[in-house]
Image (cartoon, rainbow, N blue to C red; front, top):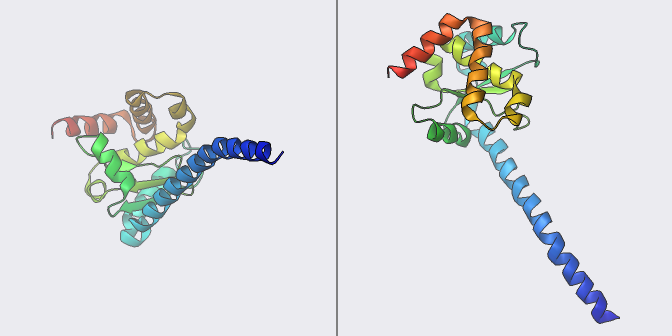
Length: 171
């Protein structure tokens, strides 16, 4: 009887540990990302109150229905570094949609804050949040970016979005 119980316990442990271990690794990775965003970004209102007010006003557009937004400035976070590696031209802003408590946060780079197209950048990121359910269904990055641009065009106008896109392609 004891041998049988040990075998069952051993099999149960072998089946349980990979699942529990995998969940632990996910939790540790998730915790690291939350800590990293907290540590390596700063509240935009503390960095530049005029830019904060500008961004906040864009997020109050009635077409954006996802609630209050938070704006942070990147100071070397892993989240922005990852997107900069994906986009050779560089990421100007990132929206960590699935990362609670930062799921309604736009992380802006210093470059974005200096851009004459800050309104387009913020509206584009709002588009990612507004379309988050569609973004999850579509694994196509190009399609997600087009949807975010379409939303930005509704907020700031298609001419502004087009000007931003043409200006980026000339760099």
